[in-house]
Amino acid sequence: MKILAVGDLIGNSGIKELKKQLATIKQEEQIDFVIVNGENAAEGMGITQQNFNDILALNIDVITMGNHTWGKKDIFKFIDHPKLIRPANYSKGVVGKGYNIYTCQDKKIAVINLIGRVDINVLTENPFIIAKEIVEKIQQKVDMIFVDFHAEATAEKIAMGYFLDGKVTVVYGTHTHVQTADEKILPDGTGYITDIGMTGPKYSVIGMDISASLKRFETSLPERYKIATGECILNAVVFDVDDANNRVKNIKRLYR
Image 1: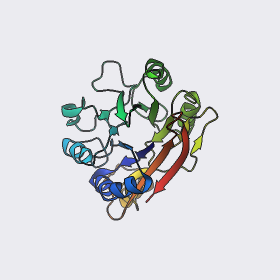
Image 2 (image 1 turned 120 degrees about the horizontal axis):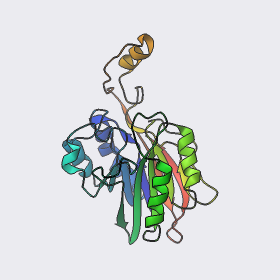
Image 3 (image 1 turned 45 degrees about the vertical axis):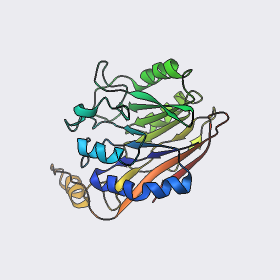
Image 4 (image 1 turned 30 degrees about the vertical axis):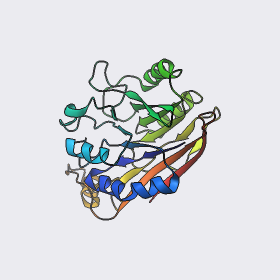
């Protein structure tokens, strides 16, 4: 089975680029299941009802979120949709689901969303403890477990990979919008990559307009961010999972 994880969609341009390329990728790579990070879909912050509908129309299996989960109030209209999950380590009792279990080709696939705590200005529970609790709860009920760890610090992501090595199928990072070249299968069999990148404007500062970003760095004055325009890229990773043992046998980065 092949699972495609698509990097953070940046605004409507990211959604349009996904729509433009997804069918071809699914055919060429023989993709069975698709996970997309959508927390930047609403022009960089959050997700609206229209964004959500546009993504679902592409037959996406799961939409994960991150630090901008609550960026748009629209999300409270569809937060309980089975294809949407938000970070599991938000405070106990918060609406929505931190993980869900899906069926594809007679396989039970769990997808868990977590958010990091290093250099992210969001109050959350310890992602390591929450990850352990969820995995122990569901590992006997599913064939595969995929973890989208939405975190800033590479060290925190790498640590999570080793923490869950052998306990889950894949740990992959989102949030920094820069695809890393460190894909690997960890010693106990878990597939890992620090960040799968972004889908949005190619000539940008992690998706944002270059001039606005430079002004902030050059002057230290506040400048409203806006999505960059022009040519777009799609960043994603294909995880090839052995149907016999549910372990990753190959990891392929896509940069298109």
